[in-house]
Length: 382
Ligand SMILES: Cc1cc2nc3c(=O)[nH]c(=O)nc-3n(C[C@H](O)[C@H](O)[C@H](O)COP(=O)(O)OP(=O)(O)OC[C@H]3O[C@@H](n4cnc5c(N)ncnc54)[C@H](O)[C@@H]3O)c2cc1C
Image 1: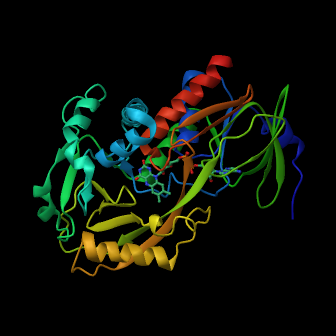
Image 2 (image 1 turned 180 degrees about the vertical axis):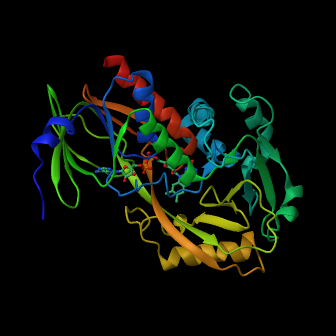
């Protein structure tokens, strides 16, 4: 059954100045920035899910700007400046996020990140060089070799080296998103969930969004659209620029039962970030393993798979908490979006259409920065 919109709907709920599609970290903060700078703007934030259903409510809650291993690898691919530039954007995003959410409980703790190495890695020989390079972004020592901590965290002897990342933290992703949605609504953003944008038509005098929910369809009108849909594509008519590719990558996560003793503090990862874990009270949250089947994990599906859950089980038993045989009590999946150049993008596809994306699996901190750039670009021309 579908219903047509009433006269009242057409008259009062379908016309906006800006519609932001996607109520994740980028979309919600873009909407907040817009109404904070220009309270008179009619801003609508829509999401296809009953609750927004992308990466922002399904991640691990690491507020990270990049490990030594990642910086080292990125420097090889994008050059020293390119790699440092992204780290700087993440650190700026982190500060912005904390400033924005001051007074809200988002469960943030600056408890440090840790990169584990199961084998020797060249990055261990160049930590001083990386710290020097980081000085202009973050004074002091960012990366510190701390093999002495390995036994205190209870890891297996497979873990040979450990580098602490000073300045990183963790937060509660559910509390963060609730805080951002409340903030958006308090400042006058209209939030509509369960609203799937099927396609967008850009005309010279405005934009029409063709939307559906389970009961109805509606054409929403606005002056400008922001697409903040991460790896999910939206059909667009009326523009002739090619869209930059963004690849989906499924991330699967498990939460264990409680441990008798919890030695973990902060965030941890290994194998070039393909495995990541942290404490959740007395439990462990662990995600990753998609490198064991990269092709199959290149999907929008939110299903978990027995293969990846078994890989995560092995990581718990062999590396993280050997001998504890912890139960896996909960599991879920989310979708990361990877841009082809690993850079964040705010693409102005048309004077009325902006697309913001490219967190590349690390958007908790970076998203705030992307949102600020997106809003600024729209306000400049509004
Ligand atoms: C398992 C996992 C673990 C992660 N861990 C971390 C971490 O610890 N630290 C970190 O920094 N990053 C992490 N990330 C990445 C981080 O969560 C993302 O980079 C970030 O959330 C991306 O935000 P976004 O706003 O771009 O996208 P999303 O949060 O995905 O938001 C996009 C929204 O668009 C909506 N949407 C899509 N299409 C439509 C449509 N047609 N109509 C209406 N709505 C639509 C979706 O429902 C979704 O809510 C992780 C990601 C995953 C999946």
